[in-house]
Image (cartoon, rainbow, N blue to C red; front, side, top):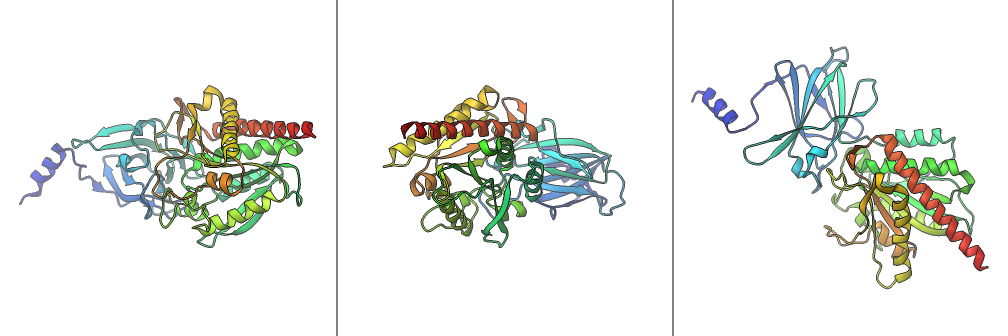
Length: 411
C-alpha cells in the first residue's frame, strides 16, 4: 500500500503529523528532578518540536515533569525556536484546566522564569494538549512544571539567613538518602518555649509548598529570639524529590498516608521519633505541613484540618490556627473557602500527618495547600511564594505568643 494516502488521512483525522525526527536535538531526564515520558523530538521547518507526558514513575498519579532539551554536543549552536507540547494533561492530577498551567524554563547558565499561558489544542476525539513556543539563544533549555526546590535551595536558605538554622541528619530515607531537619533551637528537657513542627514535600513534586515553607523559615529567622522554637523538615520525601517523582499515592505507600502505629514507611518512623523528641524539649503547640493541590488549581491558598473523634479540644484548635493564617494572607492569596476538611477520599484510609499530630501528639495539625502557577489570576513567582510564607509565619508567631501570654496570665 502507498503510505502517502495514510499520512494524509491521519492529518485529516487530527492525529499528530509525522514530522521528521531531529537528530541534532536530544531530551535528557538524567538531571536533578528529571521526569518525562513518551518523548519525541521532531523538526517542523525551523522549529524543533518536543512532545512529552509526565512520567508517573510507577505510581497511580502523574503531575511533575522536568527535563533538558539540548544539542548532543556541548559546543552546539543555539536551539532557536522550540515548541514544547504537553500531551494528555487530563491524566495529571487536577489537570482539567491546562489553561492555568505556567511551567518554568531556563536556558543554559540562566535563571528560571515562567512561561506565558499555553496554546490549547483540541483533538477530534476530545483529547487536549498544551503547547508553548520559546526562542532559545543557548544550546540547552531546562523545562519544568514549576520552580524546582531541592538540597541546593535548602543550603541557600541556611546561608542567606546567616546560619540561623542548624542542620541535622535525623536518619535516612527508604532509599538511604539523609533526611535533614532545620531547627532554630534544640530546646531543653521539659522546656516551656512554644514549639512548632513544620514539614514539606511529603508529596515530592509539590514544590510550591517548599517555596512557602522557605518564606516561613526566612521570616522566623528575621524574628530571631521572638520566634517560637521551630523544627522543620523541608524535604520529607527526599527519594521522590531527587528521583523526579510526583509522589502522590505512590506505591508501596504515600508518605502522608503512612503515619500509623506502626508507621508504614521508614521516613515516617524517623519523623515520628523526631516529633516526640521535639515535644519533650518545648511546649508543643501545633504541627504544619506544606503541600500543593491539583495541577490547574488557581483559587488560592487553603488549609486542610483533621477531625479527631474523641478529642474535641484538639479538633477545635486546628481551624483556629488555620484561620489566623488565612486572615494574614487576605484576599490577595487566600481562597474564599480557606479552612476545609481533610477527610476526603484517598486510596488509603490510613493516618496522615495531621492525624498523627492530633491523635498521637495531642496537638492541632494543619496542612496548607498552595497552587503551582496562578492564584486569582496572579502568576506566582518564587518571591510571591515566599511572601505567602512570611504572612503565614507572622500569623503563627503571633498566635503562639498570644497563647503563651494567656498561660502566663493564669499563673
